Image (cartoon, rainbow, N blue to C red; front, side, top):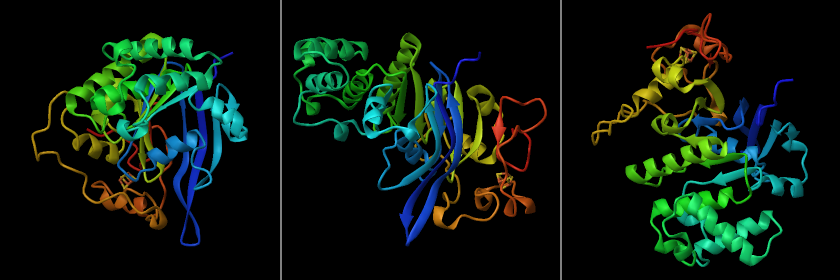
Length: 329
Ligand code: SF4
């Protein structure tokens, strides 16, 4: 029998209250992640990627509501009690957020913060938790972890703080790490170091990673597969090399054009952006939501919502939601 995916998401929908009704910001998202696989979820701000990440752990309620199936190791998170969910959050699923300074408590030493997370998931004493925390800080390559244990967050650099957050996310022994824009607040050198660390953890611990970012160049450095989200829907999915060399959706093509060539720094002021903006979820255009910004738009695009399908015969590893039905480039 084939092994179940680690995470399986089917028809996830997320809504928020607005104007006396509910507005759908994630509109039928389906994907899976295998054990040890790194997957990038990419889109501009407002595409629904962070709402999707929070919904995976049911962290949106009661501000928002969600439907669909989210299975971790085959177990449906939608049917879990709050107590069961608390064991999953920080346990089987570790979370790393964008801003390390605000995610850490400024009044508690970094070592104690990691040790507390260890104790939240395992019944061990303070002394043992301290050893465990130092081992985790060592694992994320924080220099001199035993000496730095008693340091406070403000005594660390941004990159070091992000390492501490990753150490805390590993404390529950997760199988999946959800990292939401983990490098956005860092400069290019620190960004490369944090990505290198995530890659090493993926390879050494068999950790699966869901990397959420607006930056395709970041995805290319870590992930095997990419999911491209636009206006709350998946518009392209496929292996990273194939999607990067020949995107099948005009939005992916535009995203690729909007980042510097991989491995080459952008010259200041020379980073083209995609004209227009992500549509307001309360007033989506008819047909394809990308139509107002698309250089390939055809009459059918303004009438029919394109379904996620293989973009042509013999291209089964790829999916794209576009009436063009071909790869570009
Ligand atoms: Fe462009 Fe039409 Fe494809 Fe939408 S369906 S991305 S408008 S070509």
